[in-house]
Image (cartoon, rainbow, N blue to C red; front, side, top):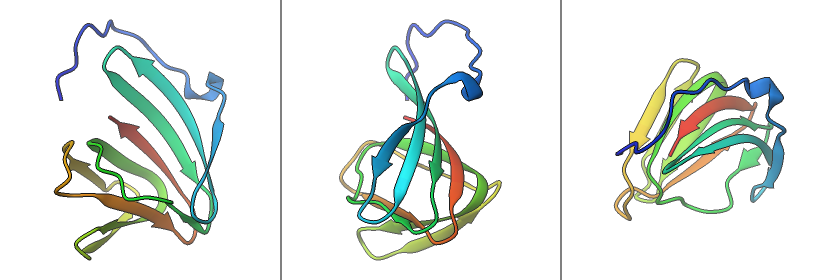
Length: 110
C-alpha cells in the first residue's frame, strides 16, 4: 500500500451515513471515507451475512466486535474475533469471502 497525497484528517464515524450492501444472504452497512488512493470503511455485518462474491482486492481488516469468518477460495477458513485482523494484497492468489453468524463490526483500509 502506498498512501499518497492524503492530508491529516480526523473522522467522526458517527457522522458518516451508512449505506446498505446486500450479501448472498444478510446485509452489511458501510460508513465510507475516500481519501485520494485509499478507502476507509467502518462496516457492520448483520447476523447471517454471507458475502456474494470472493474478493481479490487488498485489505487490512480489524475486527472490532463480534466474530467474522474468512474463507479463502482454496478452502482454508479462519475465525476472527474482536482484536484480530488480517491483511492481504491486491491479487488473484488469495480471494476471500466473509461471513458471520452472529454479526460483526470491522474497520477496513483498502
